[in-house]
Image (cartoon, chains in turn orange, blue):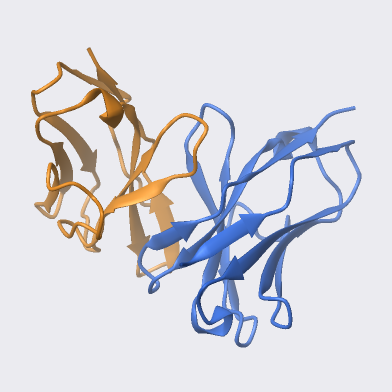
Length: 107
Length: 118
C-alpha cells in the first residue's frame, strides 16, 4: 500500500529555514500539510502542494517534485514548534494517506 | 464562521458501546463530506472514513471497516462515530474534520478523548 515517509524530527535555530520532506514511491496526487501544536487539533497550512490558505503566514511554503513533497518554513519562530503531517488522497484506492509526522524543534 | 464542536471525553470499559458526536455550524451541513480521524496520544494521524450528509454515502479505511459506524443527523447538523464493542486499543483522540473537496481537511473539531480500560 502507498506510504508517505517523513523524518521523525527536524531541529532549527530561530530565524533560520526549516525543511520537512514527505516521500512516496510516486506522489501522483496533490500533497497537503497540517500543523499540530501540543494539545490542539491539526490545522491546514498548505494545500495542493504549494497553496497557502488564508491566515497562514507567507513564511510557510510547499513544493512537490512528484516523488518528494517539501514544506519549507522561513525565518522560523518559537511558535512554529509543532508536529507537521503531510497527506494525500490516493485516487486509485480512494483512500486518505497521512505521513507519520515530523516534530519540529526550535532550538 | 465554520465550527465543529465535538462531544466530551469518555471513559469506557471493554465491550461497551459508544457514540460520539460532531455538531457543525456556519455552513450548509449537507454540502460537504465529513471525515473522522484517529490519533493515539503521541502518535500520528489515521484516517477512519468519510460520510456525505446529503445521502449518507460513506467510505472507510480498510483498517477501520467493520469496526466503527459513521452516521449523520441532518435535522441537527451532527455527525456521529459509533462503536458496538470497545477495545482497549480504541483508546485515542478522535477528530471530525470537514472536507473542502475530497482532497484535504479544511476545518477540524477540537477532538474527543476516548479511554477504554477495565
